[in-house]
Image (tube, rainbow, N blue to C red; front, side, top):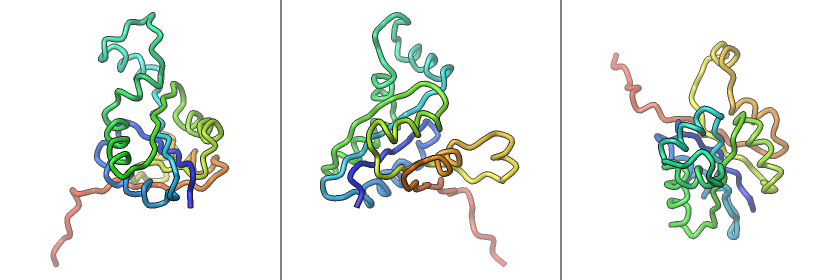
Length: 156
C-alpha cells in the first residue's frame, strides 16, 4: 500500500473532485497521507493573488494561495472526512516540473493526476502535463480521466 501520495490538482479538476478523492483513498495504506499540490503558472498565480486581495509585497506563499483554492480545499475536506492525513502545498512555474520536484520533496510513493482526453496531435501541439509526469516520475502514476457526462449513447 501507498504511504505518501502526491495528488496534483488544478482548476480544471473541479468536475472530478469525487473521483480524485476516491482514487487517493483507495490506494492509501492505513496510516497513509496525501500531499495535495496545486501548481500555478506565473500569470495564474498573480491573478489568484489579486482575486484574494493579497498585497504584492506580502509574505503570502504559493502554499497559502493553494490552501485557499476551492479544488484543493474541497479535496482536503473529502479526504479528512475519511480520517486521512492531508497537507496542501503550492508551487509556481511549469506544472509538470513542480509535480516531479514535489515527488522528491514529499518522498511520494505514488502520484495521482487528473486530465482530459486529447488526441495525440493535441498533446503534441499543446503539451500535456499528465503525459510529462507519466513519463518522468520515478514512482507509479495514476491518471484519473474526466467523466464526460455529455456523452450519451446513440440508439440504433
